[in-house]
Length: 299
Image 1 (cartoon, rainbow, N blue to C red):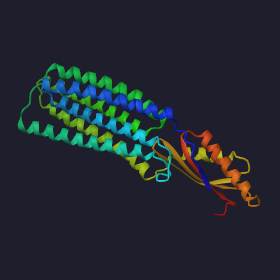
Image 2 (image 1 turned 180 degrees about the vertical axis):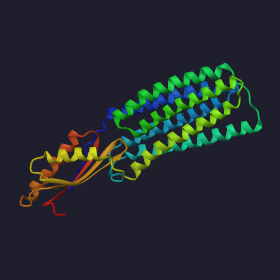
Image 3 (image 1 turned 90 degrees about the vertical axis):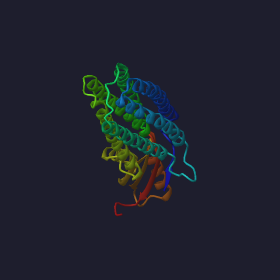
Image 4 (image 1 turned 60 degrees about the horizontal axis):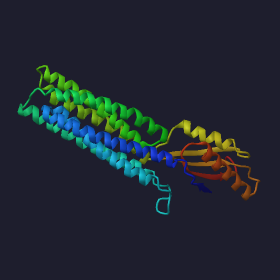
């Protein structure tokens, strides 16, 4: 019949998501400088690799910020379903950057091992690794909560990226300490472990983004919520064909409702409008609701 386009992904949600993108940019820029400097001065391949990881996070935060600005734009003639998928695109860009960084880290580590240029790193690398673990874990905790609260996939991806950076710094710390304990090969090996952490995190983020691109269903709980709300509207006899998919931070809902076949077209239209309004008001972040009217359960 028609569709409702009242966006419940509020400006405040987008502002919150953009704020944490800026925090991610500033935090990772600082960590990149500190870890890069500490890695070079201390002659630690693991710390340099960890700095490369943080450097990729800088660009990731930039792309996420830009994507959030685009995703906030309302639907138009060229984009009737809105611009929410911009967040998904930025998420995949983040994944590509992470994978590229991981490949470069492994290449450098293997080259170091083959050349035999292994040295015990200095104490500065240890302090930088500890600082990185603390800062990245704090950014993850606050950013992940903000991402869940605003239903922002790019913010959650950015948070998970910081968590992977914290894990990679732990691996770097272990390698650095091991190298200082007369096992210098552990430093480049730790760099390889860092890369594996990056690949694992990238896979999980990519699968979530691909699920959105493929219009993967959001799950039975959300569908049941739609059905319950629709059936609560007066004169709705049944509901079927419910489809809910994500578009960035927003949800798109399609459904069929069954009404009395003897009522007028105008009355059926009013019932459909009531269903759309019920879902739009009582479900978080529903950007569009399409309702098809059926005169009976025979379809």
